[in-house]
Image 1 (cartoon, rainbow, N blue to C red):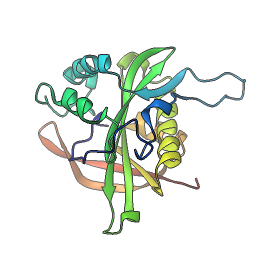
Image 2 (cartoon, rainbow, N blue to C red):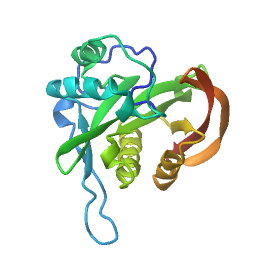
Image 3 (cartoon, rainbow, N blue to C red):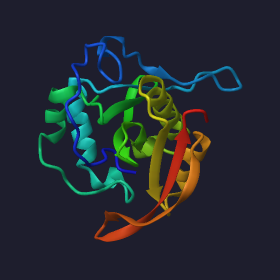
Image 4 (tube, one colour):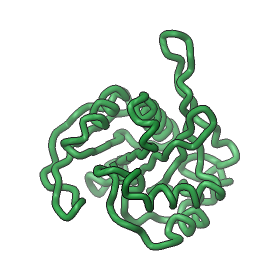
Length: 210
């Protein structure tokens, strides 16, 4: 999945204001995993992107090898992420990014972007994405991070639906989404352009009550 879905976003209210759609930044507590059956808490949390994280995220995004075949969509103009961070802290009303931490160290990022299924405001949903460092894949971190992101969006916005999509050949991400409680809905044919061609993607969703 793309670590930073493309698309325009509108400026949100100030991050320190009660009117910000994701809550005042000063009260934005990192999300931690729920205890597993053994009583341990998964060592994964989400937190806002800090100013000193931007350079790290830009390095990650500029590395085709670590992005992998399902996450590489080409280079972006220098300073794009910094300008977005200066604008809204990457916590916009329609688009945002959070750092994924494991055992206190950044290991990747998650993202959300608004999608609309009709003119009424209530028809808005969020599509989420994730990218993790290669050495942290296959450990359940992706499942937990996406579960936490969906829970946070439901808790702090009024959307009814959170979506995710991934390449039909990305079996690992499909398993992660299903373990995070997402329901497979179907195939979107030739929906994504990557590696010089169009690719089918699998669409998943999670509703507020699920």
